Image 1 (cartoon, rainbow, N blue to C red):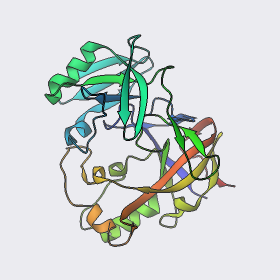
Image 2: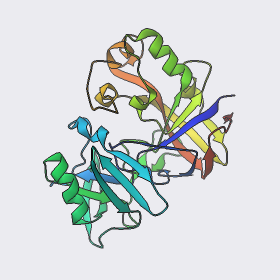
Image 3: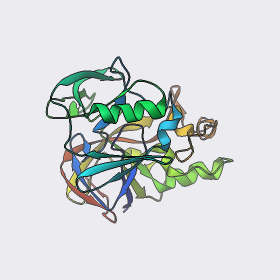
Image 4: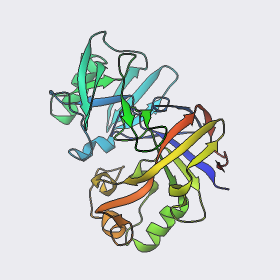
Length: 262
């Protein structure tokens, strides 16, 4: 059966990811995954779609803080810090309460991006349910675009790179769980499966946006891999790659855990 080859979280939405040896799977996503984000003056989320420089902000997770680096600039954010007052923020059609972390951190990002923005985080005041067309018909969600987890198989990446004129790394797809698979896109059909202590449920293949065309190291954009994927993974005008997944039972997931399909 497929095994976990890598685990990833993206603490601040649209910024660089962090590789983990193990992760605590929660309903909203892995612990610390997309629990922070940058918003504009209207509370709307900032994304690589509008500013590819966000990919170049690299994150590291410490025991008590989140470290962010952009070129030579460095910021350390205590994991538990936030203001007491809430602010209304939006992610696509979702609207929820969040808390600004601290004005000095917001100013750090504003200065580097040369636009006014705030760093906010999910707290106990935040609640973001998502309706599903299939059972269990609802899940909780972090600040991710649409689903708590994205699962991607190595065979899917291999099939893409056999067709694509550019070598495309897996980090373009910002998955949470990478699996060593034998057949391309087999992750789409897992339905319910167990990894370590946690149980997951695949809901549907993931419809991709232009973020997959952004080099996650440099922020440079190209036409690939969208151009290649459109030749064999375009269905109903959507490019499908990776599997949108929810959690059924919480627990720890580790590199090397085998997929046990229900």
